[in-house]
Image (cartoon, rainbow, N blue to C red; front, side, top):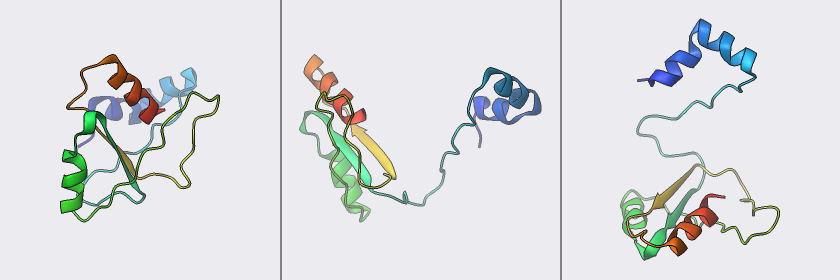
Length: 105
C-alpha cells in the first residue's frame, strides 16, 4: 500500500506542483518478500550481531560496509548495493554516532 506522500506525489496535482518545484521523481520502493538484487551491507554498531545472524538464517551473506575515512570523496562500492541495514541497538555514544555517519556516507 502506498504511503500518503507517495499517493500525493503521483496524483495529477502533485505531479504538477513537483514539476514546478523541480523535484525529481522519487524512486520506487521495493515491497514484498523477495530479497534485494544486490549485496546486503550490514553496519553493526557497538558489535551487535543480531542482523548478521538473522540474515544468515535466511541464507543471505552480508557484505561489510565501506567506511568514510574523511576524504573529499567517500569510498564507492564496486557494484550497486541492494540494501543497507544498520543495527544501532547498542548506539549510546558520540563515537557510535560518528561510526554511523561513516557507514551511511
